[in-house]
Length: 197
Image (cartoon, rainbow, N blue to C red):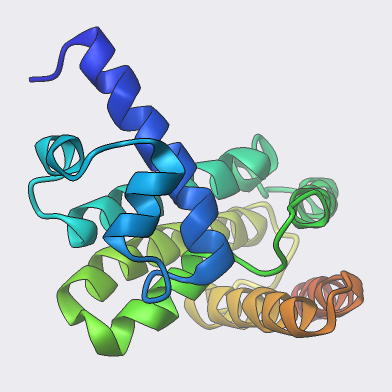
């Protein structure tokens, strides 16, 4: 159990390391880089993260997942009306438009770890699945409200929306413009609205 001061130190390390890993990737960020960037000794780093870099990366993923979802709130927790979906779209664009680095930190970590560290990749992918689950729950609310057909499949529709979102983020990262993300979100909402009775 960490003291209040210890928890504050751990949080400071995670927040500073998150920026380094977002800029360079997990593989491109060494423990020495993290120690230098967080002004932390190796012994202090291992005190807070006994699993070393792997444990720290999982803490970074949790931090970034929280940031990404908080930026979409309160809309992502509702998504029961077309207006809430439009507000969600706006919040996603505003969040990624305000970031110094293009792309999604959770998607990037998930992709990077999937082949290199499968156990950590599964844990990071769980954050992605939670996010998609919020979209699926919103689609279920649309269906319950009669805004889309009862035959509409929330599972496949949430996959389509999530794939559009992350495809848009990938192109946004490579093109350094929000235009692909905006187009992808507009396309995803058009798919959903196409399910209207």
